[in-house]
Length: 291
Image (cartoon, rainbow, N blue to C red; front, side, top):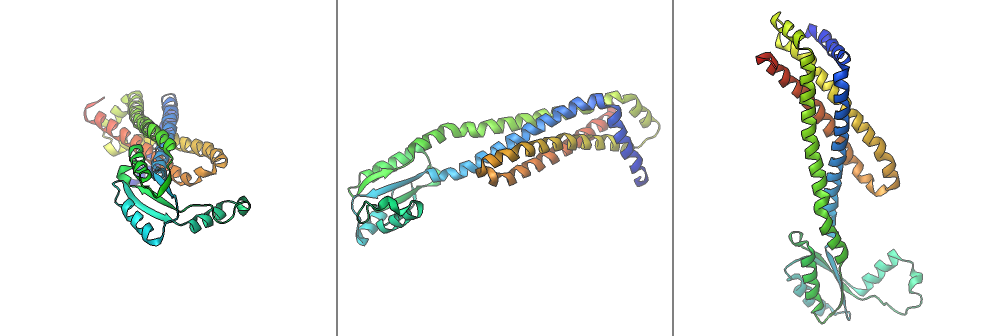
């Protein structure tokens, strides 16, 4: 059997060339669907990463009216920690606030001010299971009700925008990915059926002449594998070609390039294996009972 592999491999390549009028449209459609699948999967990966980072939005900073003493600060921390939606909190003294300011801004900005104008504050993180606009607003109201607190800051506008948009951010790439998977499978199945129909008499003659199932199946499965690799491989190359200038203009996306490579490899393997599987089951069904 192994001695026949070179001949069967050459037959697979000859089959691709002979039936190129059937294969080229299928290859073009596989390429397009694979490209859209890679793009949508990367969009979904980006959405998941962005969602994981959205926890930084659900933070509140409460500024003290006057810098509290150690005992008073401990009492306030204990009271705030008992709030329903508070996950963690950090007390930032006025000296720490000044040091952080100097790290972020030039000291010249304070040359007209005597002493330390920055107040002590509390930085509060909302619990993961309560990260929504309502929880932020409720916690902010509780903080403002405390006489020691003068100002409470939270990015409520950004939170509202994120919550209004995030479901679309997930729904669109998931829908496109699912749709592309279904379309790809239908394309593979129909392409294989068309290829098999065009060679129906040849396959029947080989079958009734005593050709083994392996002898008939191998060229078709190899054709499908090569077709899947070609279509999805070209799609992966095009995505990489488009991705490179985008990352150069937006360096913040650089950390997502590794995930994009994983998505490309996944689509490449999925399409190639699925194409080969579609060929295998289609030809096996024909050998068992005809098309």
